[in-house]
Image (cartoon, rainbow, N blue to C red; front, top):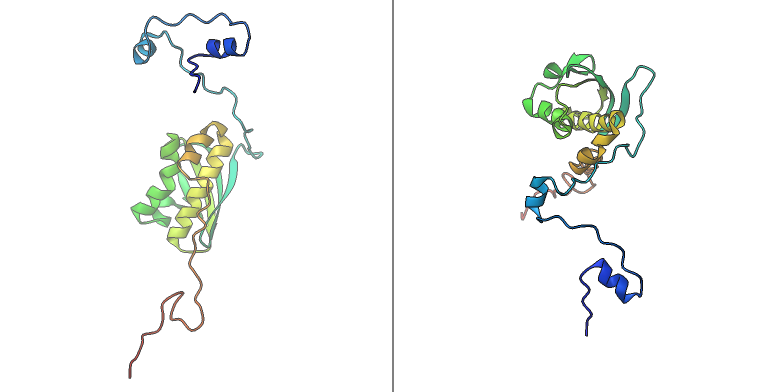
Length: 184
């Protein structure tokens, strides 16, 4: 037979301990009590788990990687200007989808237009470079504001996307594609 215990005081009684004075329960329960203000909202942590990492100029630095592209990113408070290899983002990444990829970390963190980004990116193509810049911005954002680490990590922006092009094998036309079979 199972012994059903309904509360901590019942458990304490079963263990032979004196029951502690139970706090007074609110008159209403659930959502009604929360809306009435009787149940306090759980407090958010006031101190971040990590320390803020800034350089001598007050910028946060991070490195982002994707495919063969490597981006070095510096983040500082500003008007939302993003400069890549000395050029504006609209010029460097002409496709709107690539600019959308770059701005994703700011959207998740609700910090659009609050930070200036200066980055240099090398290697790979435009898609890989945009992914590298996004990864670098997300890393730098969490270094500047450690409180933002949880939402940015939950969105998956801190994880390096390790997918890359598979190498070509000998005896094959591409990585896995065989040559066309000829019957005669």
